[in-house]
Length: 394
Image (tube, rainbow, N blue to C red; front, top):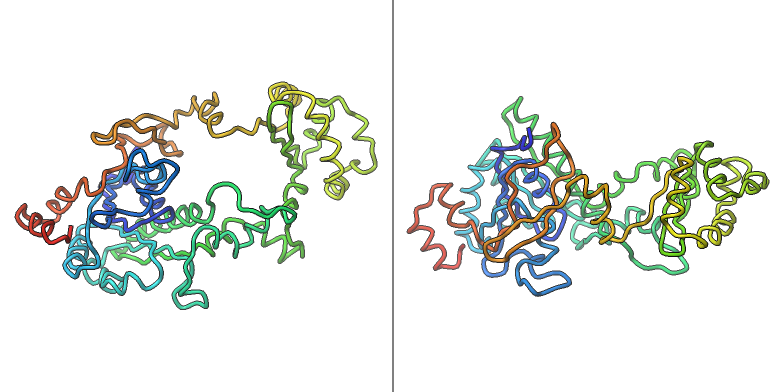
């Protein structure tokens, strides 16, 4: 069960994050994922990132493309399109995150692929629906976050700027993966393939259901700190860094906080007598807590809060997260070695099945590393492959 999708074959026409993240999750579950890339260039993420030390093997590319094989194929050439349709007969799933209509223009849309393989599952991730008002517009993560309300909820209106990691891309990939797995399960019962579609916009909205129910049922439009006030969640600066804390709505945790900071008087202040009062006066509470927490280190406050069972933790930087004792205990990171690029630190999948993660993990592939191998598996002879390569088709 460590690789429950072993035997499932996937063709990934993914670029950047959303599509490759679907392929990554399926690969981590044991599927044979073949990444289809442009000859000579590969997908854009290969040369994207903070370092150009390993051209074609950027940290961005490595993050989303472990446990895959790479096949180069020129889809602008009719021979490449025909070869893709031919390959699709041998695969279970195709993943793509082009703009709406691109697959159809290339002759490898749903109708063409379904005709080639009625059992095929086609997963399409786009910014918007093809027939909707925004269908022709380009979309990246920032657009999905913006239109869904996520940006509004994360942004300080007095100092607006994008912060943090991509969100819409990953949640689109996660929800697309669940759709693919459901379609794969249904195919076991019916024998029929399916078309799985999702946009960045609907995935992002689906990711924050309580934000929308707060508005539709309660008439509350969440701002950047509304959720924090309702949950009594804080990020506070200690003498050596940041600490996050969430007493939430549990009275025991609130009383534990007062004991940990040795300020029972705050509990008798009418502004903080109960949860509704604390929500209403959230900014005043922050103002009181800031100088208190600034007086000690994160470790000291974590020790005190933990003693009183208050949910809290130091806000780790990425290096601190890698070194965190719980993270080390989980064994999420390991070192893989590529014959061309050397050692790369990779993640394991997050889910454990019967106590195990994926077996036989492999590093992200070099561009076209498995082209001959994959084409051979779908029936091409060595001479045919050589001719295609000479013509720039692979």
